[in-house]
Image (cartoon, rainbow, N blue to C red; front, side):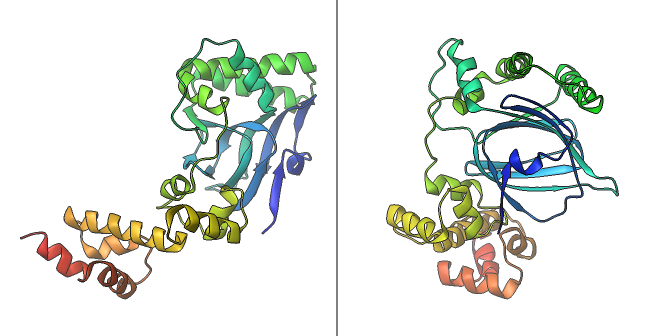
Length: 279
């Protein structure tokens, strides 16, 4: 599958480019399909119409109008689409990570986060919406910004988000360490991602992903995912959830396949398991 490199891939969209900062009005037909996207720099994304689903190594989220996300450099899997006949629309700000590090250099020391944040998700308040509206209007009017003014606009937005979530901004622009492979898999257990897509998020080839996972955890990623999903399904049955809905929730298209896998792991059918735990 093709890897889309941004901001290079969207340079034809209406934008203001100032040095290595880009403010962009993005419009596209979109669709339910997922794309592999390499962010060559950091990005703020604000959905204006439609829905964006983003998967990162450490987690995933869904954005609609009124939501924003700060995405660090690296690999993502993204699906964007409009719920109407109108085009999907978002406002995106691309900027180099060094501006985030320089911004944090002037801030009081924060406790070192236990893990890196995959992104910063936030609700857009009136201040941030006015920021977005102003820059979108400048793009529509084909205005320009100096590199110095563009840097100030990035710092303005970083300041607003730092006041909202200083710990997450610290995690995003602190020391970057790859999350463990098991953390990546756990964060995406309930998502419909293929092993190839998980490998992409881990910045590995499929063969390297399988090899490194099995070396670290003594089990193949396929088996780990299957067993963890069945553990979660068993916990749902313990809570009284009906078998007829559990098997669909945990990635099985047919009840017979779920019954076979469950019996292989637990020695009984899901129905027998549920009855036993009622007694």
